[in-house]
Length: 225
Image (cartoon, rainbow, N blue to C red):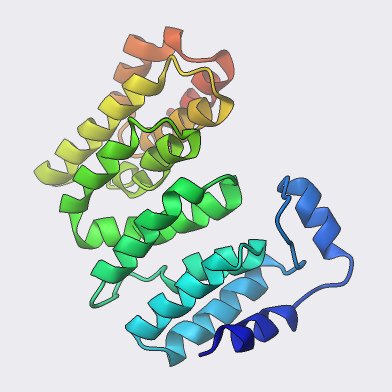
């Protein structure tokens, strides 16, 4: 599929008057077309059903390079799939986008795609760990957001518990970071973890809670049983 054809498909879903509202809400300076998330999701799903993996990766790369808000979200959705073989090129592309993050909505959709690639090959967590030392706040945040699947296992295997504890170590390194988005990423991880592993959540808060911002500490604990 050619890029211009893909952009025409996206533009066909524009809702008049929506762009200004979305640009304000998401604090965007890039072009915003005004397309709802369900519509982007449906368009990307149709593309996934008709394009092979190399074509999906190629289109995702081209969409991202337009720097249009919805095109970047669509690029991420093109690669958000558990079964994606081969997936090395997709994982490489996802990693290349991380330094461009400047918006939570775009970042979170890319992290959703990246999570699938980490589940497929958990050795890639080693690469994510390098993000925790980045000078780029959005990259540091992405390290926790992309690892959210490891909060959700009710009966984790030993290897999954090892990764869970590893990420909690990253979070411990974030607790004194004053940035709101970093604090929120810690509280988000802990809040999701608390529903499946309340003991680890309580232990983390007992050790590090006093160093967290009050809003983050409260948010992290609000789902504890």
